[in-house]
Image (cartoon, rainbow, N blue to C red; front, top):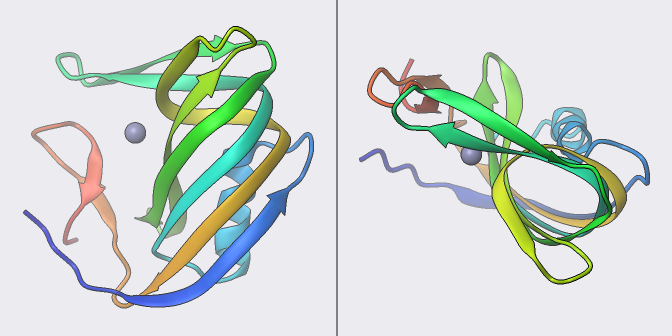
Length: 142
Ligand code: ZN
C-alpha cells in the first residue's frame, strides 16, 4: 500500500463550458492553476460520452460510446501527475431518459451543462508510474 498525506489547498467550483470535452476542460483547469494533486466530483448532463472498461486479463481498455444525451448522475475522480502533466482519472455513472445507467472509466464526454467541485491537495505531488502487475500507470515512486 502506498499512503501519502496532503493538506487541503484551494477549493474550486466551476461551471464547465457547453460543448467542451469534460476531461480536457478539467485537465486545462488543473494546468492553468498549477494543480498537481486533487480530488473531484461533478454532476450535470452530457450530450454524448465514451466510457471505458479495463480488461484485467488482456490489460487493455475497451470503450463504448453513448451517442445520446445523458445525465451525469455521478462523477468522481482525482488528479495526479502523469508524464509531467496533470492527469484526470474520473469514473462516471450516466443515466438515460428511462433512468437506465451506464458506468465506467470516463474517457470523454461533451458537456451540455456540468458543475465541478475540485479540491486541490497540497504536498509532494502524486505521480503515476507503470505498474507491471496491472499494466496500469498507478501512483508510485519514480
Ligand atoms: Zn479508471
